[in-house]
Length: 148
Length: 150
Image 1 (cartoon, rainbow over the protein chains, first blue to last red):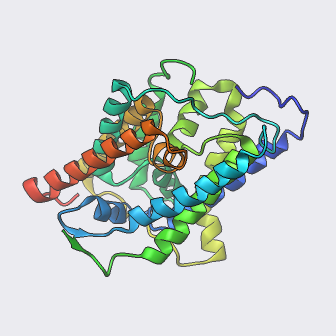
Image 2 (cartoon, helix red, strand yellow):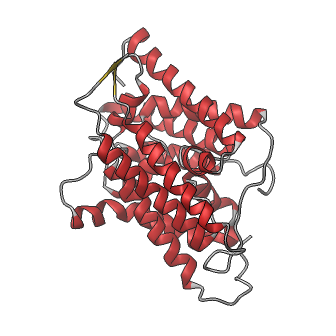
């Protein structure tokens, strides 16, 4: 949990870090074209005129995120003083598979995953509003089974 | 399968992806947190002692279109508003499935698809295989078997 950092560093650092990260994340999604569900569906439509762009978004994202992870291995704590909150290596279980299947159905029905949906609301896209409403209900109706 | 060369945007896809990876690195190195959007949103309710950085991240996401529009006008496409109640219901039901599914699976395209795969997590690999597989199947059934536009 995020009790105040033991090192007593400036409490604004995590807020600034998260704000900047969210901003860059959103800009990245828009630049990549992922804020447009039609483009995402173009990737998901393997049997139609297939747009492979989303695969390259993942390649770029995974590659650069990996560099960040490797950099983080040099220190015990993050810059804000918070420890690294990594989810442990839990097994692949039914919950993960069922949840991912439900998510995939929803993603395929609309072309929105959580990040682009929030960004689209920020852009004033009315199409994303009912989706985000449903998503927040889905996320908030039941808590996580255990603290993780 | 035929590749839609006119729709394919490899340069901006890689550049946008790299920015997403940069954002994930910033959140990891500064906050020690995984940039998983569904987890960040879910935690707004389930981790009440921990709202500040989550709200800041969501504020950044929401501000991104305006900031990008100011720096580089003309970049970015968004969907037109849904037409009719059937469209709104489809979007709402899709959202419910996205929310419930990512809550159960503890992650979505960002947490599992980008951050989890970057960590070489077997759970994330399984999650990505399943949600991509089902999404491919849903679009195939809708567009090519039933023949609805989506």
